[in-house]
Length: 633
Image 1 (cartoon, rainbow, N blue to C red):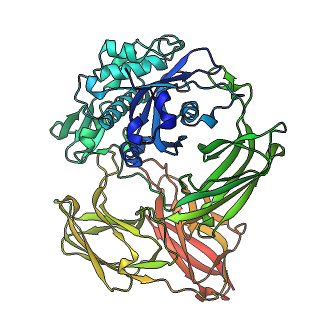
Image 2 (spheres, helix red, strand yellow; image 1 turned 120 degrees about the vertical axis):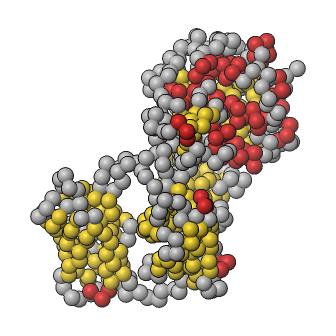
């Protein structure tokens, strides 16, 4: 007899008891019209959840958390058929109705007497039934995701299946994936039978779309889908064929920036700041429902993180068991009162929508300021939420200390280039921001880096060294290595690190010092007056010019040609203490082959204070501009 999740989840005391892959169904809203089919991955622990979803991180696969009546936290992901804007089948992760269905069977209190239940049914699949070699549940999870990725990738390339409620639907989508993985017909017929109305659970739709061939370039280690235009440009001697994404990725291949951007780890931008929102408590001073208790729940950045929980006037709930929620800029918190939720027409038109009790935006700048509070008071309700924001290091995942340190780069010496045919075009990133280069370097060359601004940090700085190659997706820049600089070497003098990736060998010298506190700094203001173009960077016409002040956009882009002058008088004077950095750019198309041109940088210091109107020049890439400014004290 098959293991049924709905019979076990509420009282389970061990994640091993419920871990596995499930063929699941729930009611289509409104109730009694049929079953919606999907997969549930129940992970044996959070480490497995991170491992599986992390492997597919570029594809935005995530996991969710639920706590059952026994106090057990379980971690899971759901995936099933949805539709795109053209009504074609597309697989989607963690739709809200699937999450509600699991929520309802986890706790007795989560089933509202006034709301129709989702009636989740879920039977655990056995990997060993497959004719393929699938030794474990984790292998089955990755095998399913691999097939589903192929299907979605085919859809992106124009190979589509139109959704049909009765024949080409969610049930057929689950059945077809399992069929391509060698699960026998009789087994799938047995596992796909649920109470209620099932349609097309024995149908096969577009089985050929769940497989896909990939071509790797053994020279550049770039991986392409077969339909990518850059495969035709590749030398036959460099082509390596794959039928599995991870066969290639495990051998060191990287996704093409054009056709496999989900797995293009070379160019994936990482956040420069990482914050976590810690929820502490929620107090109800007045409910929204005048006739009784609210069923309150919280969303952060669109994802439900707590509830629904019954709350009445005077109730307070402790939220410290909610895992801290990661965000990079702003956490947008919404409080709702759950109503019946009954809806019609493919779950898009609600008869009784949940009531929004308010929205609050929490910026990362509140990190380190201790406990804060915010109020939700829409629809006559009044709730008080207590929370705090903590900054975490993007490289280590640890909470950052209060002390600020400075990284001083001293020199970089090339002992052996990566390019065997000549010099490298070397550049360095700090926490994924270019801080130096590209500069031409050959064997024996040393570059003095002491003129660079020190890099302030609290947790760590990740330094990556690259050799810039062409801008074609099949010829990404070569990564020569990376390492973390931490406060552990503070005050220990000059340190060194050797980058030796791809056959290259570079030695970096650096040191770390503690940033001295600034006591009552003088307050200066930079007043920008005008910008004149003497010669554009674009040989074919006008530049699209813009200006950064301390790496923040302050003006532009504006079209400028030879002889043009633009007034900057409308820009508020910019406050600074010691010096301020200005960078002038020409905006290009923004595509991978034509990035914006950095014309030049200028440092303006307090020494210009009180000296009236001053000028500075930006010259680079054949362009010439003059900026007029004044420093006010």
